[in-house]
Length: 549
Image (cartoon, rainbow, N blue to C red; front, side, top):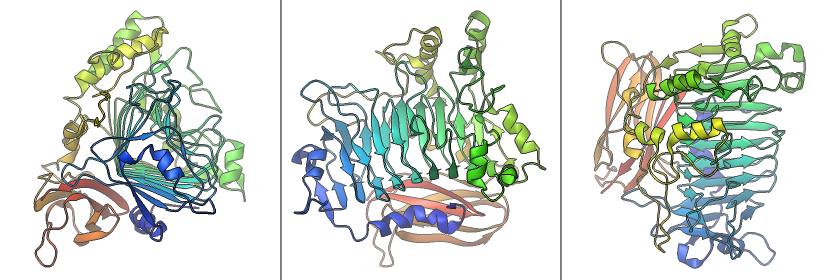
């Protein structure tokens, strides 16, 4: 069984993609060369096989267009070259087809056992005419045993899924990426980050999300399971900021870590009378609803998890839910109360954990390896400037979450959406999306990003460096709540270690470390985005910083 619990396993997130594609030849592609799918499909040898394994997108002054799907049956890497000053990634968007329709999917991985890597890209659902398709999926995985790695990418406006899959025993490693405004105008249960597609009968090997942000998502932040089995699920150090429906569909996970995340405004649409009591629950009716919602395994799941003795399966489940922050702002909870006081289609609202899940974690005899601790209901502090526009809307068909709620729950939703800083395509030949992202400055800092005073730190925490951008020195602060072996290191986006800043056992406290971005000869290293990673006591946190010379 694959586990991402050890330091070695976590380091694979950085090192493995480099090894996987180290022997692949690279082709640089400029946006002016033509449609991206045409350029890659034409890149073949005489025998029809792909000539290159790595495609570097180097244009940032206009977008890359596609008119059809790049279908990979062998290993493939699509690598964006970031602007060295601003960190802007190359953007990919659909072109309008001659009949006025839009292509739905830019990339499909359709070879058993292949490896796909996507890094430093802006994947935009809006086409050149500022419209999108409700069937859009940015990356589709349609074969068994595929390994998909996504790092430092933006997925903007996908109304169906950012990532969809129907192959068996696929692996997903998603890091440092941003999913925004994934809202379908009248189907409130799609607009999802990743989905085991309908009817949800694919087995999943590993799904790991580390260091990502999901802002304004209708449906799931992660859906690795429906009916069938997932070997390992990891969701660590992510921000999930407003989902209309439940952020997870993970009720039958057996080996999982859900630690050090921020859940803000999740399940904002509640559950109405048409959905209760069977919303996303296959084996028994729901009584209450939660961000974290587990249930007992089906007989098939028990047999898959512990074939030697399925009767013992429940007691072998290992699930951690630790050090998460969750919060619902007063503007949203007051709206819920008013709705239920005045409308006949009343809703049931969610808590952090539903009743069955609370009971499972409290039953140490039946579930000795379920661990819940350090989860707090607290405002993280970084949504103050975002909330008003997001909840109430701006202009056009961005009507805000609250009005969208009214349309959905009254059955009148048609073409309106909600979100924050919704992208609008101008149609100019040199158009590119807003950069930095409209929410970037607000999300850089928060209450949780600053070490607490007046006592020992409550949890391991890695703070955003300051200043950022910087040249050539910057400070990094981190918390150590209990004595542990601590490693803090800087990496480039190729996964190469640039500098080890800390590698020792440290006691409880808040630490400040400075990185002077010079090599051994006193020369400042190359401008660009770097990752700094804190590893301590089995926990890994990572953040990005920008060096500008």
